[in-house]
Length: 64
Image (cartoon, rainbow, N blue to C red; front, side, top):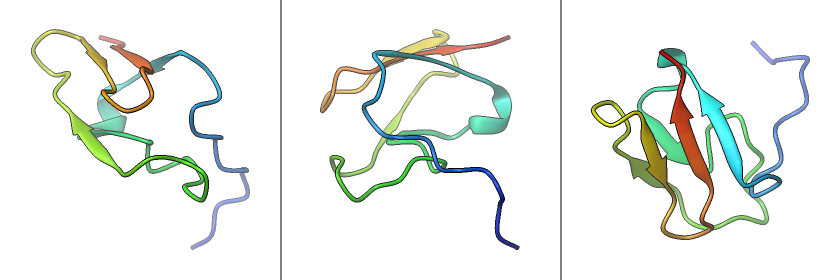
């Protein structure tokens, strides 16, 4: 089924708040369009609650 919401733009902001529903976390996130972004990388965020993408520097905070 196709979603009616527009995809997030990758690398559009420096910080993102994510929830358990977004796990496993990858950058760019699966809800982001990928055409102009870097290769997908998975980020370990579960234990620390924070992760930073080595490609674009985006910071992710896990909402508990």
